[in-house]
Length: 146
Length: 146
Image (cartoon, rainbow over all chains, first blue to last red):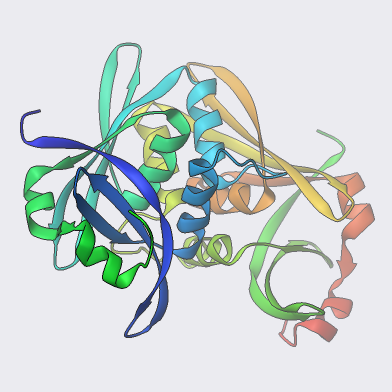
């Protein structure tokens, strides 16, 4: 676990990119921030979870949580463990009957689920080293008080 | 089960609505069609599953399927069981260790998951009676050979 860092979800932002505005999730580790572009539906789901908002009907990630609860399984933690050619790779770690399972997943799904399950979000230090930026660099893109 | 009808997924279409174009899933029961508006991400996910397309990284519904597989659970069937004030209500029926569980869900998630799991999509007859239209009525909105 020594090569892993626990991060917090700072927020979801719409930022300009060469191909138009895109939703970006910002994970924070002290003064460093890890920006991850996500899909629009995943961004909405993360935003809801972050502010503990509920929707009239269950979103897909809410359904996953109720599915896990009904099977007496739970999310123990999620791990953003690789970054290759601009694509982040993550793993969802679940536990049932004392047995741990790891599932290949996108960071956006992992973040949306971890927030709902109050599970820790860990990032491999090599990913932080590759892609994290200083908060003041981020403030050039996102003009918010970080 | 006498008040339930098995339907097939005809396709996902973009149709004009008073508030702009919206994705619509068409479920078919013989000469009757049940139109259900869905979110854009759910539409993309249903379209992928319908054409057995895979994406480089797992979509949220792919993650649900791998989650179920890892827990030796499976989707037995899904049920679109109510329609109230224009909102469809559905249930995802899963089985693990011979025990069946029913989860409250949106039809879009149920359809996206049922297609991936080769599970039957059932609709309560009262819903068909309320909202299904003749195929020729649908052809006025969607100019396709149904």
